[in-house]
Image (cartoon, rainbow over all chains, first blue to last red; front, side):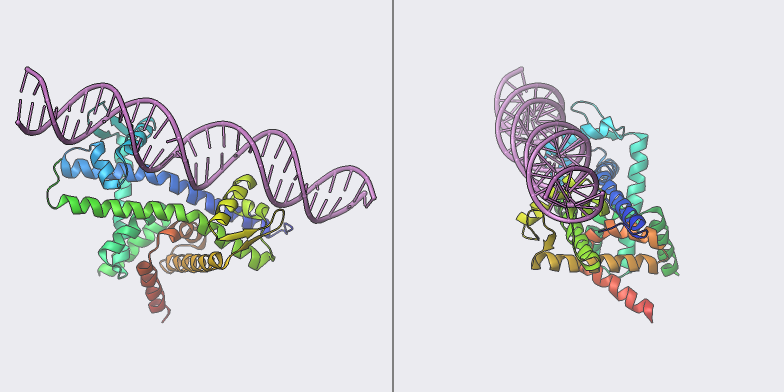
Length: 146
Length: 146
DNA sequence: TTTATTTTACAGCCTTGGCTACAATTTACA
DNA sequence: TGTAAATTGTAGCCAAGGCTGTAAAATAAA
């Protein structure tokens, strides 16, 4: 295949889109954790790694390892054998993630998707919603409400 | 935290949702590859690993490794130093993926998202769209067209 | 206050999906 | 035809995110 003048920019644009999707995938873990930890603190008063493991459906060892990484990244604070807490940065990310999650789930339901399917799909989709798309979703929901 | 009668099912439901999201993430690679290979064959007459690498924005070595895995999984056929082909299973998956991708992109644009952002977000979102949600998207688009 | 249970931590392993560097093969062209 | 360029393949490395198994600490119960 030769690189005609048009194919090259298309290639690069497509590569950039795939790159963004990969970035979103790797950011998804951090978002899931902080969102869940924030929820647990709000509803249960504390977040323990055993609860995080149960909610995520993974082993507690996986949780501990990930928590350690997120702590290095400045999203989480822990003390040995004590609960898990969010840093201000982690709180911000959690709030943003929860908001995106809720908007996506509401949009799906507004389009006629049942609650359970909306929750499942929102869990995966929320990490791939750009600011532009989020705004479009919110605008649609605002229109529908009238 | 004690497991009150209500928290347990909730926990399990949430764990199942996260599990589905993880499954979708790992299936995403296969879908991206077959969709892209199918596109390349359609537009260029053949799919070569160097082209796949350029379009995905990864190294050719990564492509070769993944192609080998997908071949073992029965989605792709290759002969040493020859092009990449899809098995019937791979063709089916590619068609399905392309369709989902297009529906998602169209929906985003119907909601006012610009083409480029729609393409980026669709690339990530398409792997997390259940059959129910896909049908809802299509129904919405059909309604809009009138 | 011991003892048992729960929770947390750590060690080591696997797979996926990235990478670079180098080797082999095919294709293009001088 | 023979050599250079392009393409494909291989080897070996890394990080993330899974896992099991075992040890340590904290909590609950006898």
